[in-house]
Image (cartoon, rainbow, N blue to C red; front, side, top):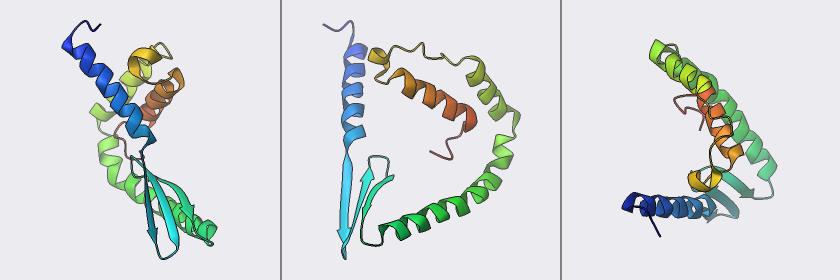
Length: 125
């Protein structure tokens, strides 16, 4: 069935990635329920004041971003980081990836490469 042990491993990795994408963690403390995804991103908040809490969360994200941008400026302005961004821009497969082989849809691949082009060091992921 598999051409090599690497093909078998690749299939196992794809299956694991698919399962991991669906994992959710739920925490409940003092009437607040929080749900996170496998990458620790907040995906749900259940509390009577959830809108206020989420607004504060978004404000904190907006407050921290300029600080991260300033801290990363020296790296992002380095010629090697710019070369990586340029390389990705000129070698983007533009939807040519086979979703069955990559385990991702063409849209996910396009989004990944666009995000990488904009943020090669992954500081906003």
